[in-house]
Image 1: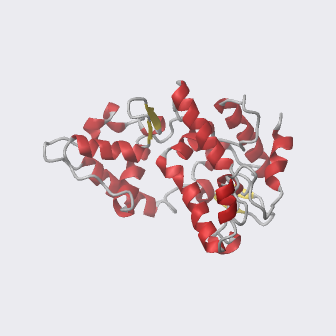
Image 2: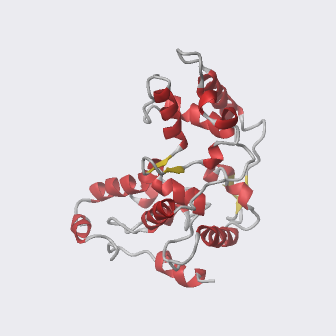
Length: 262
């Protein structure tokens, strides 16, 4: 396995910009740290647009400096192998909630937090709000259930999807807005988290317990996958971080802006 070799390129912090960045960005790396941090957050924030999301979910990437011939399943297995070593005593199903589903022990090892009646009150409230939004009837009598197969059940795990006609990656949230557009209803602003949050959470809850079923078989979709992989692992900015610096190498830790200065 190439893991121990390829990981070394990412595990040693460096303060210079990555050679893979453009010369223009390298010049901008001399700007004040706040501006660079803003650009880094913007790059990693593209996860919501679908390119990064496709890679993060479909491939569950390790780091992009693996050989180019590695496919999504090989990437996924490599990441599982790495995280099992970093989070001993946990299993892949324990990682589904991210840092919110893990707690440090006295020994420093991560331990899964049981999701039960004692800590699910807020989640239940959020899902109740989402269900009300999902079931709301449009002016034409339809609802979100009419836009998705099986009334939305087992659908969220198929997103993001590559739309060959539009040549775009479509996230679940984008599909929800497409539904509203189809039925001549006002679209939801993505920044309106009081609506998008509960609605998306409920739509995803309809696929609870299902395995991801993303399709990247066509060349165009695979190209998007590789683009997301490159972006997810590209070091940029004054601190020379990539999305994977936190979301892979620091898995199990709780980091904040004050801790990593971005």
